[in-house]
Length: 200
Image (cartoon, rainbow, N blue to C red; front, side, top):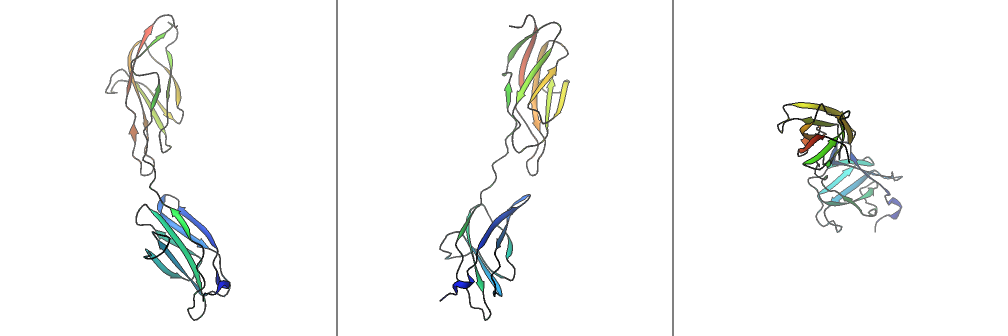
């Protein structure tokens, strides 16, 4: 019969910063215990643990082999090797991070015709930042290949007022810089036509 006085209270687990596969288990110290047995399994019955480790401390770091739900439990060991009762079972919902999303252009719409007054060629370009969060670069060019840039803005704003040099056709896009494992990525480009006249 297990010694209930050696019952372990689990404190929880955390994920290491920058490493979603590194799990840090921790539990409360049990007076009189000489060690602890930690088990991790893919099912709550623990019929086939993927980790069965005896440690002297009240924490343990483990790198999960893949994205899945993992169940874990701990029990204290007393002198002579006799084990206490298992703790309650906890589950670690381990899922891969969502795929990164590129910025999305919102306004103006692709192919928009924008009428401006003679003394103002300023337009607002609106877009989303995408994920993960990273610095953004807005580019506006005369050509679809973006070799003839007329405006570049770097920052985190998702609404930018752009002063265009004249009327004509322009192309614009937004690039999210690299963030961690997510590479730099650009939105699809849009085209707009700026004409002179009386704004509606």
